Image (cartoon, rainbow, N blue to C red; front, side):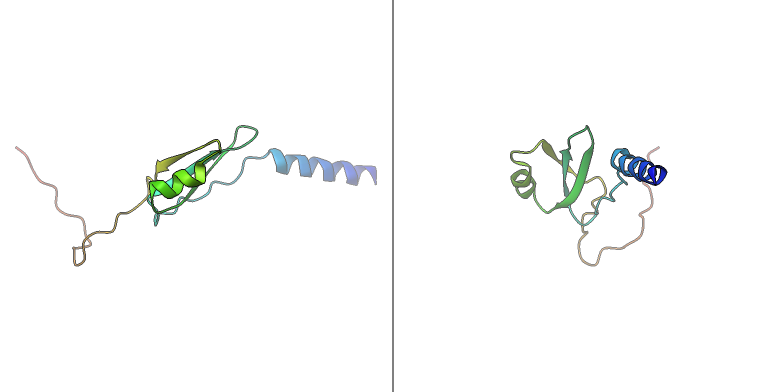
Length: 90
């Protein structure tokens, strides 16, 4: 019984100390909030449509707002959806 209890405790401590799985950054939102947590880890949440919303959520926290590097800005309606040919400069 002691071995089972010890194994359970080791598993619980390992789960607490293991790094969290990476969260995918949502490309639908242009602004992300990065929060630092106790123990030195941090968490990024991309769910803000404006800098003001993000700043309001970050107020009083150990956090900062940043641009979402994966945000795909919507293009004008009717724009072609392919890659354009590169321009050549000689």
